[in-house]
Length: 183
Image (cartoon, rainbow, N blue to C red; front, side, top):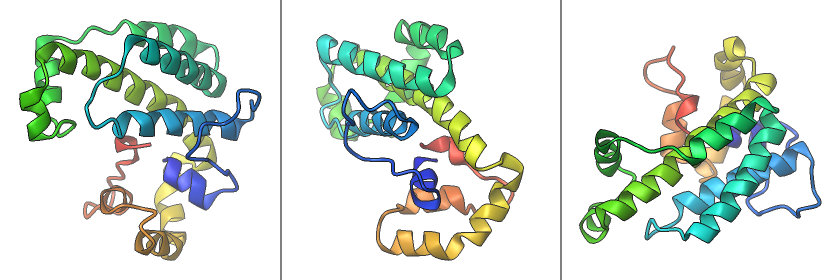
């Protein structure tokens, strides 16, 4: 969703963390993108409590600014999310960890990272999705993607859009757009 908003609209969503004083909608979207990327690019799948607390507060602030006050309770609930053993097991085998990480990472740290990863990913997705749906009306998304296909193809060639993102945008199952899979 971020890729489309960044490349098919006038929104200049950044990869960098905006200044604290920037309270524009684009800054809130950029903050979400920054924290999502920071989490995904965390190769050892660990984060200190202090860093998590700081990042969580910043992310929550961005989500609440984009999604409204209703997200305040959601942010608080997600922060204290406690997954079941089955959810941790599913996460372990979901592709979010590489096989060498599974063997050298303790169950407790995997559970802790899962809590943080799931919380940040799902929370941010919901707020971004609300903004995305305002820009791209869900019933007209397929039409818009078709109109913009050539431009999107050039972004794929430039490696701005990954193959996985492309497959989500243009699935072989034509009626099934899976944009919820990433943001």
